[in-house]
Length: 84
Image 1 (spheres, rainbow, N blue to C red):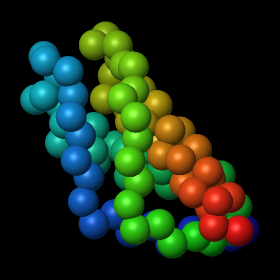
Image 2: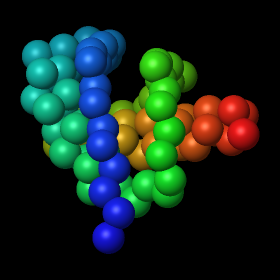
Image 3: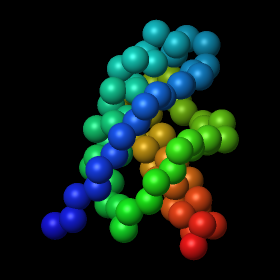
């Protein structure tokens, strides 16, 4: 099994009004969710910027983190494809 080494220097989340107090917990969960995803190969990406994502206030921190992790994975895949 191949493992990916992931280092996140900083995460900045801008959440809609009413969810701001959940940012720290969501950021911690985001790392967990990124680790659960299947990754191919290796890539170094200094920054990942996501367009605004739609989340629901009723979603758990884990659900929001999972949604963001999938979006991050997609963005990294696109950046990796551009650099090939």
